[in-house]
Image (tube, rainbow, N blue to C red):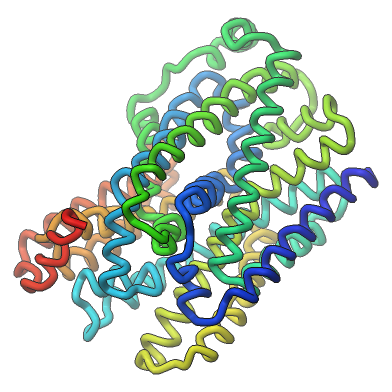
Length: 480
C-alpha cells in the first residue's frame, strides 16, 4: 500500500510541477484561455483523446462491458470512431473560425458566427447550459477519482473526492489551457500504457477473445450476444460520434492548435489512438469480466481489482496513476472551459462590456476555477445517479451544441434564431428523456443532437438568412 501511495504522490507532484511551469508561460489572457495558439498537433491530439475518455474509460466502461458483454461493442465502435470524425470534420474549420473571429472561448465563437454580439441571447442561453452541465460533468470525474482512492487506499470517500479535486484545481487554476494540454498529453501516454498492460494480462489469464466470448455465452447467453433493441443499438453507435461535436471542452482544444493545416495529421493520430484505446480496452475488459465473474466485485471496479491481483505494487501504482490520468485529463479541461465561460463569457463580455483588463481576466479565471471545483465536489459527494449515468447525462446535455458547431462551420444558411432554438429545444429534449426514464432506450447524446439539429434547420429556413459577411466567413473556412 505504501508503494502504491508513493507512486501516486510522484504522479500528483509531476502534474503540479507541469502546472507551475505552465504558469510561467502564461503572460496574457490568450495564453490562459486558449494556450496562445501554441499547441503542436501531437499535444493537441493526445490531449483531446485523454480529455474525451474521462473516468468513463477505466471505471464506467469496465462496468458496461461486464454488464453487457459483447453488446458493449456498439459503444466501442462509437467511442473509437468519434475522435476521428471530430478531427476530420471540425479541427481545421474550428481553428480557422476561432482565429478569424478572435474567439477566446467556445461561446465567443458561437456568438460571432451567429452574429448575436448585440442581443447576446445566444451567449446567455449557452452560458447557462454550459455552466450547469460542465459542473455536473466535472463532478462525475471527481466521483470517479474518489471511487478510485477509496478502493485503492481504503480512504473515506469524501476525503478521496476532495483530494482528487484539489490537485486538478491547483494545476488548472495555475496554468490554464497550457497546463491542461501539457498534463493531458502526459496522461494520454499513461492511458495507452495502461490499456496495453490490460490487454497482455487479460490474454494471459483469460485466453483469446473468441474463447472468452464462448465461455461468457455459456455463463449467460446475453453476454455473448449483440442482440438488443434496434433503437438502443442506434443510440449506442452514434452517441459519441454525435456527442463529440458539441462538447465544449473538446472543441475548444482545437482553438490552441498552432497550425490548422496540421488537422489531417491529427486525424491520423486520433485514429491510431482511438482504435487502440477502445478496441484494446474492449478486448481486455471482456477477458477481465470473465476472470472476475462470480466474484463479489462491483462491475465498475473490475479493472482495478484485476490490476491489484496481477500487478506488483509498483506497477499497480502506475496503473492507478493511469486511471487517475483518464479522470483528471477530463476534469481539468472541463473545469477550464467552465471557468472560461464564467470569466470571458459572463464577467468580461457581459458584466464588463468587454473592457476587463488582462490581470482581471487572469484573476477572475483562477477564482472561477476554485468556485467551480467546489461545486463539482458537491456533485461528487451528493450524486443524483450512479457514475455512468451522471457522465452520460452531462455528456448528453452538452451535445446540444453539436449542430451549432457543425452547421456553423459548413452551412452558411444557419441563422442566429436557428442556433438559439437548437440549443433550447435540445436541452428540453434531454431533460424530458431523463426525467421520464426514456434515456434507457435512446442515449441522451443522440436525443440532444437530433432534436437540436431539427429545430435549428427548421427555424433557420423560416428566418431571414445571415448577413453577407457571415455567409462569406463560412465560405472562407473551406478555402483555408
